[in-house]
Length: 395
Image (cartoon, rainbow, N blue to C red; front, side, top):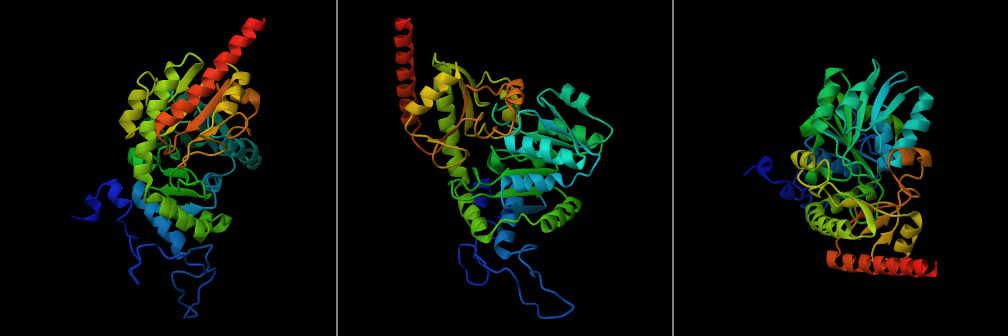
């Protein structure tokens, strides 16, 4: 049986870096070297200076490229470093069409940084292909897709967008942070660049900040490699090793968290105090069918609305299990408030235009027993209901 015949779960463990060829060690060596001795004036070795290449970082880059089905991977100091460096593939005068309810840091990069350098942008609801077509300009050079989107979990047809991009000679970028290659492989659907905040599910333990990118052809690999070396926002070797370690348990972590997310989404959807639940694993989600055509699941992130910001604050103060924090994709469940966390960089008027309300919470489901999370949520919702009843009686 060849390596190519292995399932994804097996390839997480049995890839080209399953052992050190020199010692047989089953953990990639951490090479804390910033520079490398050269044995010839005219012929330098593969490694010369660690910003350009380091063996530990290279191992992670090789593994993520293999898992995503790309030709080359790149490891960066954060997800935003990966995204920002990929955007440097564009030039002044270029135009990018971008998912409207995109991560707040990406919104900030596009609106406040790229715009200063003459890169134009248009935000659209990428679930509506006609809107995407209408947003195209003669200078459109890239489509930036986030699917499922953050935080409203909208699902964009990656193949349709990629085909549209190819028709006009543009690139397709896909942020695959929420699903990872365990559940979705955008390059197989026609995308050109896949991006990750590896801080999230790939590493999975809330102990590292990292970004990854994978490209689908050698020309793009050369261009992005040049930018990685020039811009220099590379991932340190200790962090690269932590991501490599986290990757080994990616499938089992996601399998548990995804099953739990559906159970919790069902519970929240049936609760009278919850206004809306956004999760593409629910059969009544408008993009349920598309999600299950282009991915192997709906992931472990969902969002839900209470009836007001005041109700949200009471609910958050009552729950005990989830960490209330920025980020997602960890072994512990993380409850986030997009308006003041992931999308704080987006002005309120822009958030509201996209349907990101001040009463919206995002939940990244971890490895706890979902029954415990439901009991925890129920207690907080029951207390919220009792408080509302007291207020009504007082009136």
